[in-house]
Amino acid sequence: MKIIDPYGSELPEDYHKLINDFGLEPFTTKLPRPNKLMRRGVVFASRGLEPVIKAIKQKKKFYVLSGIMPTSEKIHFGNRSVVENIKYFQDRGGKAFVLVADLEAAAARGIDLKTAKKNALEFHIPAYIALGLNPRKTTFYFQSENTKVTNLAYEFSKKVTHNEFRAIYGSTDPGKIMSALTQVADILYPQLEEPMPGVIPVGIDQDPHIRLARDLVKRTRQKYGFFSPAGFYHKYTPSLDGSLKMSKSRPESLLELPEDAREACRKIRKALSGGRKTLAEHRKLGAIVENDMAFELLKQHLIEDDKKLNKIYRDYKTGKMLTKEVKDIACKEITKFMSKLEKGMQRARKLIPKLKFVR
Image 1: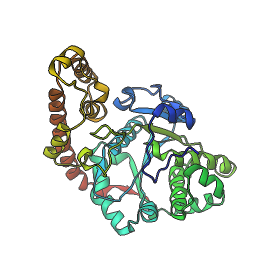
Image 2: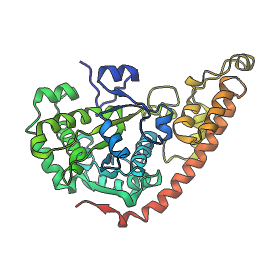
Image 3: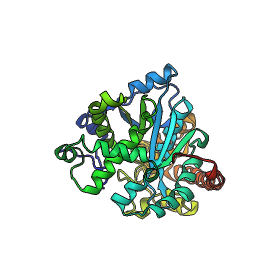
Image 4: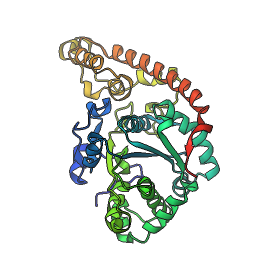
């Protein structure tokens, strides 16, 4: 049985295989003025995106929603990808919703509600704002404080069978069941006020929630008239050792946000490179850029300008540029990035009392 587990640590090995196995749609840049994640293939797939594309082009209502898991005072570059895509849809007229998954943190991660709220208000929300989220155009809420979400989750519980849940998630742990139903209620919550297309930018591990939400839309269409939500999937930021995803189990290959820039540079300098074994071989054959984790950081997160990135790629691919030079660029960019993030978070914390929360 093929399972993508949003609660587990197992990772997909092949994104093309995922597209085929789970009926995803390969992402093509039909969206107007795609951002760098879309242009560079970091966004690799979607599910049911056409109504959102149509809404953007026809300037009709739609929404974009994502969640915060408030389990610690660190996030990662995958969160940055989510924020970048929320901002993209915000800038094209989407109503943005960001929820704090405090009930899920309690049920599936063992984090009490008080700690979850503290983490969200003091760290996560300021970090999302510093990474580009527009706070003036975003509605925030805590799952535990939004009774419409919890009521909807309980209603959905009558529409899902034990076997179906096992088929989607691989297990039927009660905490996971409640977490998943609440996630689905989150995904569809913006449509309680008015049905409209919606898009959920996430990592591929969250696709089970999208699939369950789309199934429940069909079963409750007569009552609610919901639109099926669209999934919008980005690749993982690879670990510095070349593994598919950064993991806390390999701290030397993990970059967290925020992180001391000197420590981040130290890790980058030890990262897997695409350089050849000898200088002569490198000059003759050029780098295997696809294996270079410093370049991958530049591509996914640290360089906005396509021309600048393409020049680095060509020079490295042809052997004109050395691995040390690529890592030097990555260190310079990560230092600027971390400084900007810290300053942005300091400014964002002052905005917290002014944010719009659903009660």
